Image (cartoon, rainbow, N blue to C red):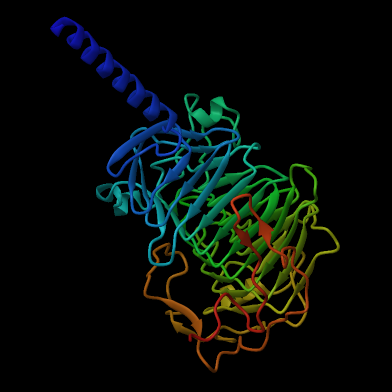
Length: 422
């Protein structure tokens, strides 16, 4: 009898082990990680509020699956493995103002030496990625250089060759939906974003300390319909915006860029290609209510590959602390002037009246002080000089399969990303 009970106990134990193991396997795509755990390989499901996820190898959200990242999650990328975050399915990174999601590296590695990142790849969204949201999300210290061994190269993602510096975010589905809002991208080697299609909103974001030797804050190509508004771009190496119809994808690139603030952009670029907004290659560009403070050039074109003639430019403000800067704002063969613009010819004209920013700050410095305040003083010349008389793409919200919806923000009557502080 004892032998029978022993055998029964052993059988029950085996059943329990098999059942638990089966449950763990079945749920592995729901909670792929726990606080303090590690992740690599395929991921999906939910990363719960406040957890930390150590990414030790390249991760992939499979086609047809989704990953939701809740508020306060920290994603630690491995600087030795130069990990890549690949999205074939959908990604929803949903932080809050008090508890943002953060893609970063270990605190000990966030040093002055690593100011321009290079420590992990970036978020790379394949053509099968239908939906991607970054809301109250921080991306920092990435932009590593690909090799023949990189997963992105093997999968044919981004430029799919060795020796490319990866952007913080690449998105490539012309029929996809992309929203980046209330987020920060900083400390990247080159481009912050490289977007090759989609229905897109970029709003209320901050970009700084990016581009050690080149790169744009926002780089849009053919296939993109974009509303980009209320973004602050500080010291992007080349351009704040690069707007192009390169790639000949449908639809034709059509970007509405309004109420953005550009400060010190372009001055670390070793050549004079850009610095503020660059337009080229039949892009349709609508550019309104933008504030250019100490930027290299204003809105510049490729004279050998012009923007679409339907492009419109108006109600932008230009400020230069020195005469060299002001001279570069003046319309010429390759620098475009608009209508109803606030633009002088002498150094110091049209001080925008920032609440707290030293206008004599060296234009070549990529260092950003988080105590700066780019809101406008109550007597700012930028107040009341903007226009609201234009159409944006996404007045009606972009809706997502998880029930979320985002509309592009309404334009303001002031110029720049921030009005008077409340």
